[in-house]
Amino acid sequence: MKLAQLTRTDHADLRIDPARAAASAATVHLVPLVADEIRTVARQFPVFLAKDGETGAFYPAALMGLEPHENLFWNGSTIDADVLPLNLLRLPFFVGGEGAEAVICIDTESPAIDPAGPCPIVTAEGSESDYFRSVQAILGRLVQGQEPTRRLVDLMLEHKVVREFKLDLAFHDGSTSLLTGLYGIDEVALGRARDGIADFADLMIMAAMCLSQDHVGALVRRRNARLAAQADWFTPGA
Image (cartoon, rainbow, N blue to C red; front, side):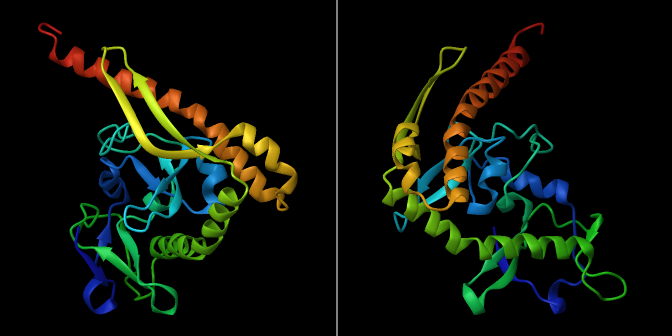
């Protein structure tokens, strides 16, 4: 990945193929979320808290695979999901810097940059395209969501509803996987804390995260299906 600040001088002629942008997520197993998308994303994916490797701070994330560099929703050409996190929808664009100094950047090595791509950044008339406006809106939500997300995580920790999860899983081919470093909402603790959580919206987000843990079973089924497909491929005479 090579990021560059997006400018009209250097990038006005760029065209993007959003379908190819999805390929950037083919090996992503954990996608950071902001607070206002958690309830929607939790309908499809397990949502846990993970720790930033540098700061140790917790952040919410959608789990898409059962080991690093595995995305069980990637089918070879697209991500097979009804909803996608904002951090995937924004690709190949990023936000560089913070606050008033934040700028839009682009991954100049992204496979989504395609001279024949269907989505220009700038129209023939010189205005920003509808596609790029939608990207700006997504990036805006991500930036605006940073502080509410930190506040939500602090609230979870304050009310002691977070506990560590270790996913010790077994698959149909006899293989196993132990996924660590994930923290989720404890249902019993949330039940005790609910009267002390003043904002009902915060309570609903935590409840959605708690319920989303059931989607781990769907990830196991996807892994089993992938393993079975691989076994069929390598079976002589198949």
